[in-house]
Length: 432
Image 1 (tube, one colour):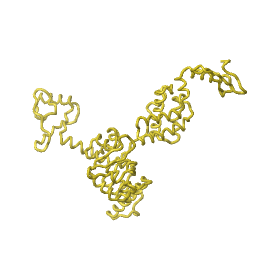
Image 2: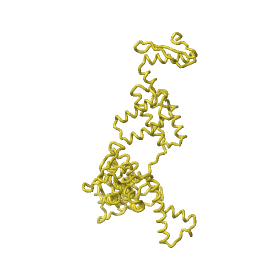
Image 3: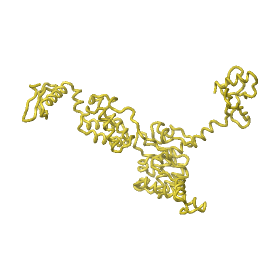
Image 4: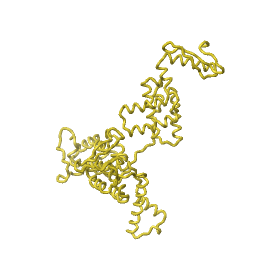
């Protein structure tokens, strides 16, 4: 190696031959001899192995740009790409754009997570940034620009603190909110309740998008490939869209006027609704707010509280109302512009417990409960209720003298005597 390096002033220079056999001379930018020798050896290795050279030269900045280009080529929607760009910005800021991609290892990724937690980022946001980092490394790996083991570098089972919101408006809450907001804003809320539109879709909505003749509303979605869609006008959507067309005040072809801080305005409307409901309650019982104790005042505020509502809660309300009326998740997913029913099942179309109880009761009906006597306990034996032949939709199963009926018992236990009774009880205990 001695003949490959030489000194100019205080800096060591070196030379090597590239793949074409051409001699390349350049500065190692090192003042230490051993460090300069290591640099020249790295040059020689890169010249002999193109794959190693690609991994040696690739930077974090270049890799993130190629990741975004890859997602654009795959047809990701603009809304998704916009989210990717935000996450890419954090990865670029912390790792540094000029950092060699090959130097990213498990310790570096753990350090990234620790720093983001110190900055106050929620774990769900960090998870999305790790998804971008993983995708970046996968694109680089395919191109031969990342030599590491991605599975060993990325965290395994990174837990998040994300819990999907469950807030949705009842019919009475929706009526009160629409009556409390200014006309154009009330019209926009009604539009989102009627269609399940995202906030951006409501901003791009036009009056011509509501086609009452065909019974559909066109939504100009851009977040995903299936976001641009038409939804049918069903149920309460008829009245809500009539309210929208009557009160919308948009100009230049748009259905609504701009709305700056919608969360604040809806929250203020909810506070006014709460105060008005408390006043109506006190008037009904002949009470006065000033005569109440602090504890009684807090109890009334809690009783008549109008929980905060976000634009996405309006979209969830649309899905929940459909679910309450028995719409299947895969149909709700299509109406919301999702690719499948998973999001509707997990977040938007969850059935409230009251609706679930009603739906199960309708399917189960007024069926009997069998309780067999348990030997060795003091629990008494309960007899099976005789089915009502006139009112019950369940018909008794015909007697079966060979094997147990497949749909339950048709012979009450108290009618079986002696040894046969004991045998039936033992068989029943096995079945139960």
